[in-house]
Image 1 (cartoon, rainbow, N blue to C red):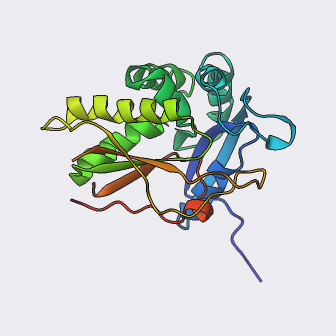
Image 2: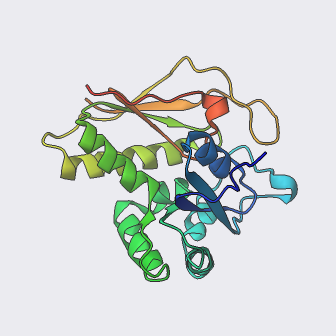
Length: 223
């Protein structure tokens, strides 16, 4: 019996931390027929052998992940394949480095990808929120994000919103959400994810590295 050989009409690359399997799994789960996912791996200093991490990740390795030359070299190698777009599969560095650095990172990587566009997730999320007309957002963080990183994420979207939305967002309020406890990649049980109410929500944004099977579906609806 003849079967498709897997050659897709649309091919998306993903730049992902070296021991992270979730980005590829999530992209593949969401991709419709005719789209294939192709990953390149970048060393991430927070990983221990076997893909384990500390209960919370420190800022230093998160910040370093977006530094040249490793991610730049990986983008260039990945762009050697006949791809249509490349996704930067790492949210945390946007929180730590800020929105302005996202723009510089995109420009820097696209100099190495020979015209293949690079998508930075947090910047893309803001674009999607604007396109949907969303005025209220809840930010869901995985349990390995520190409280400080939660606040950095809130600041990222507040800054972007204040520049791109027609009205200023209210102050951020930390709230608890009735999500079930999540398991890390090592299988240990962690506390519930933290949620921040950012501005006046019909949308929920989360780190792309959070497994769909762990968090279930995250819905985006117009307010």
